[in-house]
Length: 236
Image (tube, rainbow, N blue to C red):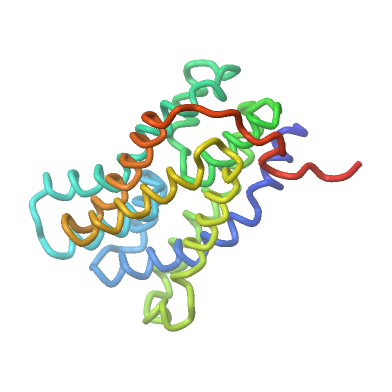
């Protein structure tokens, strides 16, 4: 039970940063003709903010189903890389626990699980689900609220809602700053993503940037990581 509580506590800041986007998705889904129930079910079954926004926008333009599936796959391609990288951290999980864990896999969930494992702490199923459910349940609930009060959310950029998640993701990336070749890998990934955005377009730039970073990390010769911990431990 203590692991579950640790997971809840560790995810509270992340949960607060996702709530405006859950409400925003609900509002966008409603504006594209989805009912409150449809928007809520979409959040509950897909549970991937960027993919949901891409999908609901394409639904509104009546594009072919295969293109919607392909676009959502492009946005979520990075999760294939996540599932491979997080394998060692899941060593204590059974097969069915891994299946559930992969459903709840998000960018912050992946980052925090990797950090916890590298600090020598067990990524238990209880910790993982405490972390995941603290994000998931409010995400679905605020989607419903966003769809219900969709007429109140006109321009999220005007009130700064669009900046919250990028700020958090930047913090997650910096949490790995002591990993070998961090600056080179991040720089290559960022440049590749920008180039792909202009040459290929969204949402492919996300996956192509990530792929460039992975290839760079694989090519570069390994070196000894810094001795300082990824995240400072609290004083006793």
